[in-house]
Image (cartoon, rainbow, N blue to C red):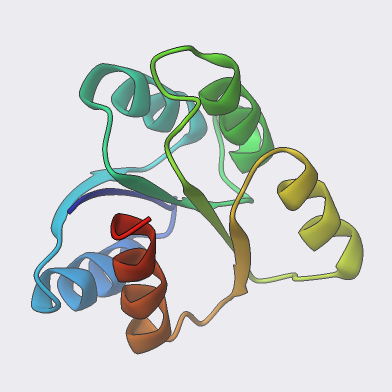
Length: 120
């Protein structure tokens, strides 16, 4: 599975990329919301792991744009956040994310979730 991982924190991005590659995923990365949307529409990954708090339009904006484009609307998006309030979780699910995970991310749980999406 090809996964687009989007996070503005280089440490988190490196951690997620290495951890998911260890589980056999092919990873592309993005460091801001605009880059995330462009890569999702151009390369159409099998799933997107999207940080909610990023520069360049925020993760919520990126999620909205991904879901509005005919090319990318069917891509499953997993939101990740350091502030998983019930309001944030509710908002990302309403915008079309399949789940909202709290940072720090458990790579095993994320890999299992992504593998399940690939079988869907």
